[in-house]
Length: 354
Ligand code: CP
Image (cartoon, rainbow, N blue to C red):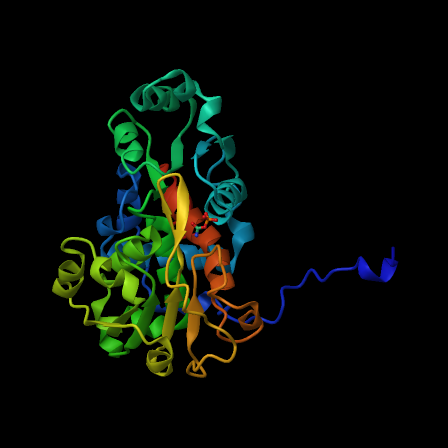
């Protein structure tokens, strides 16, 4: 073994996609009432967030990201039940990292067959037990309805961390947090600042895209145009019933295209995703679409990807200024820290902490 090969750099690589959160913090006035209200909600869908609540969450996330050491104890004596019945790298670990960083304790279930569910126990009974053991539940389940079956029996909050092809709301909040850190002026309509966003994906099949579009449409003033880029095979199944109409009714101007390289030079943000977890496995869409360092991107365009990536996103982009997907994933820890603190009635411990 060559001992020269074992050293590593603790510093993060040069900050591609790592805008300083203080710029976002400065443009949002604190209003803690919107955060306090989150204590009485489960987190199920991107639909439940209005503009004011999202802005306050982004502000709190930026405050925590600006000075994380100040927020090491708000969740002391609180227990998270982390139940992930479908594979996850980012969501499970970032939720657990967020909870640990806030000083809380965690019980983690990564396989439903280790619980009474394997013996036929119903989810309502499991939820009733969770009421006694923890203060908050984060659930990922490939069955869309499990979340709702548990919600009815829960007296502690539950967060949807991905339910089949339906939704992944905290991913979408993290996506929006990344966009507003990149361009803080977009958050306020008075700035009349707009961007053109391309989504390479299938809104009807991908929970990340579905939730992202819901959250994006809360800020229609920031969107010049939303272009959905898809392959011919997805053309007839691109949107679910009423999905496109709902986004348009909120003021989003939508177009579609099958020609990625024709559209890329006009886009400020490129959101790409190729996989969708459907049933017990995942499917891949748009295999003809690849983003690489040679793609005709605008010089200042950013790329977002919920990850995990496949061949659609070349690693040669990782060391370019287009790479905001790593910042997006990193920022999710702070966004989740903000949300979790509010949900377990500890908002008063972080509001006005500067
Ligand atoms: N973005 C996301 O949901 O990633 P994981 O599947 O790794 O949690």
